[in-house]
Image 1: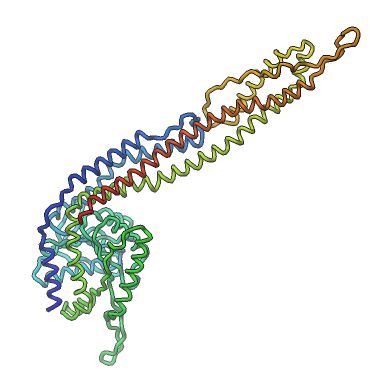
Image 2: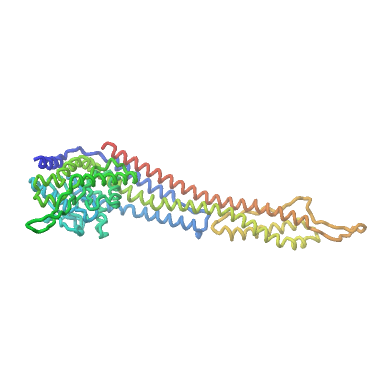
Length: 517
């Protein structure tokens, strides 16, 4: 009688569907405004490579990143189709509680659905099977196929009693990619989730990772360990045969604790609130069917505990249902809009920053290279140039010629070395050395006749001073390059700060949406 009471209590809980509607219009408006503002920010804060040539590696990286942002912006609206597909099922069953049967294939999802349906049927509750075909709900007279291999190739469901829907989906880690995709598409249609994991290998890491995603969505979730049974050899009529038996309460308790502990650890590692996880329940659908659903089997196979756990799932599921349209939009913004930016765009911005730092470090080497090559080229021709103007001792003409040579040589070296930059032309300051410097004239003692004209001191002074002049001019050029890089760095920081602010703003919207639950 106690077992019947647990089922009846659960059935009654599914019929108590009189919660007042939660006003979510303000939350939806905030999310739409957030989305529109994000799109405007990404358009207005687009990176530009002003000052760089279009062939430079940094400019090419910026062009690639901007093109990717354009693709995101162009496809954001079309991605809403996925949201609408899930919402179509939710709208069709708007007056019912929808529980998604979740887990990898061969976890016993179809078996559990059939057993729960039979329990409802035996308590004079209606049971109506259906499946989804071309986006439409099609009624079916058949229960779900069961087997050791994957049998669910489409989204199917069963309506139990007045207000409960079970959605049986292809396995999340299905061997058929289309099946896994189908499961993902309709996660948002459910008000709660039963996470099924086989007793032979419960709580696998992949399953826990998928479970963590559902918990991030703040959807009520109950872990169920299925096939909690084993074969034992026995002698029947003189022959050895295998008999299916329930695992002992001790064995089940150990597995439940193990799954719960590892799930908690995984959720903490994923920065998910572990308090969202309910305690696992172990069941054996086959043992219940073998005993023709009698009271003793209901208890020993774990279904009394399951119905009690399901009863405690109803109120959170109803609360989720009231805010589901807002949750669905929130998940879309988190997972389809913000997450790709965080996963793909943010790392690209970090890499671009590293490239900018490398380019900045390279400028120091480039400056030294430009000065050295220019100075060496001029010094190599300086003796002949000094000889050219020695006879007239035309120091001014010498300096003017040196200025022209330095300007031409610098321009060529800057062009060859700083190929990634589009620089404004900076006039080279005319060379003017100390006034006392001149050619060294050697006269005859009596006739004052010029015997020789030397230029050793002039050569030494020009050699030293020319390096200083080149250093000053090149420093201005390098500063111009650094300003270009700094400007791009500032743009990146603006985008990064904007994305961080957007993330925090969406988290605050989510907090306000759920704070009264």
